[in-house]
Image (cartoon, rainbow, N blue to C red; front, side, top):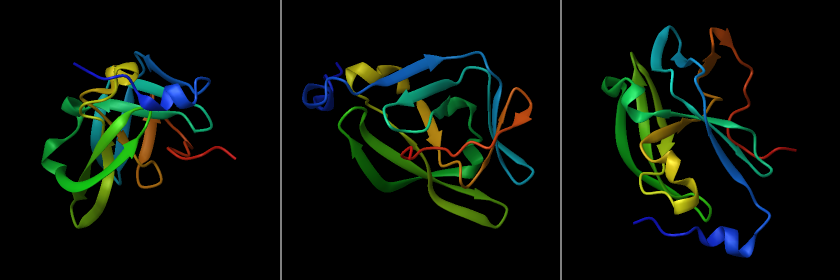
Length: 137
């Protein structure tokens, strides 16, 4: 059973909104489609750029390999990472997932986020200039 996120106790006005959409989202590396989903989640978090999370099942599993790298978020939980390899291009720790997220972000389970400075994001057939994860200025 998922635990409550400790971050919300210390910062009760902090928000992590997870919204399921029916948008068609593709993640591209060069000409290769790394992920293609019609069931993405859009995550809007206080002071952060919005981030798309796609089901891990919608990612080309032949191009990703789990790594030992991990990080921690007091609102979402512990994140695991994958390295992406397409042709001769290797992008270490380029996608992540909260495999056992806190209760408030439970919808993120089995979904992965992408560092969009390394990929091209396409939403409903339109390439985006998405800054990807990171702090808003």
